Length: 472
Image (cartoon, rainbow, N blue to C red):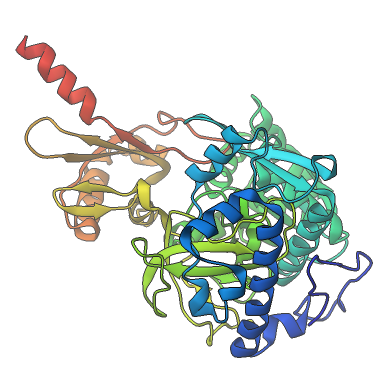
């Protein structure tokens, strides 16, 4: 296979023929069985590498009675105990700052990224210099599959901080020999400036989150700019569900007049485009020669069958600094064998992308509810203004679901909020299987975001405290 060794040794001068659909045709179109045999050999290499260099993995596998030499098949690999984010945080507390799963000398660390730490101890990502080049090559190959070529302009509308999405996109665009426009996001007034710059520069592609793309369009219109004047040929997103939800994707494509491609797995798994669609294929392909992905039962972490639902479990095949081996994502998806991929790549496929996180699910009156399902329903409503808030309340014995949605200005102007409310309640109840109360608010009342949307508010504790206050 083209340039597939461990450790990787990419030719940074290589570019495919401009007319080719594939970056590495052999790797991308080989028979699945042949690829699985190659992946098995690589898994054996990666496990031996980690076992010899990372006390974290040696200790974990010894306790489980698993050794790299025991892995003779992909079924055997399912016996390897999974790794969790909690274990990574504990390892970094024990062996600061990068944990005892760092497999290179600290002097070789090239980039430091990480989680925000807003819900506890942050996790540090130590990325070696060679790994950074590998990430750049991986991202460039997937961006090629999206239809981007040398000389195209990639506008990066995402925060440049600890967040890996913006930096890895930049590295991939640079490796692709594209014109890089690392505009960023997050500062006051920055979105209005982004609209002006995009109209001026007419970039080929936009990268960010789906919610930010919708926010950008709103701000552009406030600035008297039609988002179609950006002349984008492509938008690609990560960071949150949305780009694989048909109604959300259709809404964004209609606004910008350009196709949308979904991508993204986990920052720990960068190259996070190991899950990514292509120009011809929607949903997400699992680029198994970069990162080996298994969709597993979330209880026993065994692979589920094609067409079945589970949580992705990821293993790096090319990272040498902090290789993740059977890292549990906690996301929810289902997969197919990829035989019908329009692009001709033979990777497995997540036809509906990643729905969201399992721990984002909440239960209302016995029904499992995912925020992405609500997002999909609302984006089909003609009067929906583009933002909403999900409030879980309990003012009695049973949980209640309140969805606050904003309305387009013309809906308010025509005093048509009652009709929108009724339509939304019918559509949500039909899809979710439980009654949802809807409150319609004016456009702009619900705050927009420059980053990942945070839409769920669990108000049950508030209601309990209020009831106790009244009772006393």
